[in-house]
Amino acid sequence: MEPISHPDAVTVGPGQGTRRHRDCVPRDAPALCAIYNPYVTQTTVTFEEVAVSPRQMKRRIAEVTRRFPWIVCEQNGAVLGYAYATAWKSRSAYRHSVETTIYLDRNRTGEGIGTELYRTLLARLRAQDVHSIVGGIALPNAASVALHEKLGFLKVAQFRQIGLKFGQRIDVGYWQLTLS
Ligand SMILES: CC(C)(COP(=O)(O)OP(=O)(O)OC[C@H]1O[C@@H](n2cnc3c(N)ncnc32)[C@H](O)[C@@H]1OP(=O)(O)O)[C@@H](O)C(=O)NCCC(=O)NCCS
Image (cartoon, rainbow, N blue to C red):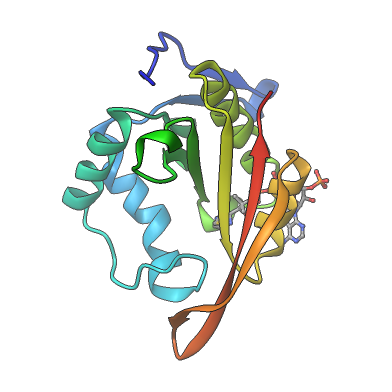
């Protein structure tokens, strides 16, 4: 499955609230670290435990975007959040299945930005002939569960006490969207 090129950014929302969705580029790395690292160091939302450097983030962007979309949402030049897809598993018969990830600036959650961003990502995945999309959610995470279910994902699994962070054993649930 080859990535397809996308010439344009998408504009979302009216007037002052206008936001732009565009492909992530390496120079977004510091802004992405600023969004992601507070979740790494202060929450159990992600199972990473060490803050990611801009250099590491740049490598991740380069790696992911060789095959899959990585979309950022910006408003007035500031990055508010990002969403991307990675291969679900590496064996060849999984080639039409991806796992998706989304993070917003902690001060900009609950405004509909996640819904917009995920919709753009899903449209890109659909255009790329992806068939199955999986979202893994460390529980509890009411906002993420609500977002996935709003967009049609169904819960398919829950691994018990699969993570250990800040001395807590954490469950991870999996939600799946099958594209027709
Ligand atoms: C999860 C996340 C991406 C959701 O994006 P968001 O912009 O906050 O969500 P939206 O405002 O688009 O809301 C989507 C739905 O979730 C609901 N929702 C949002 N926050 C909620 C909360 N804290 N509790 C319950 N439902 C919530 C909304 O009501 C909405 O449903 P509705 O349209 O039927 O009312 C965002 O909150 C985030 O970045 N969280 C921290 C990082 C994270 O958890 N990432 C996901 C890792 S799996």
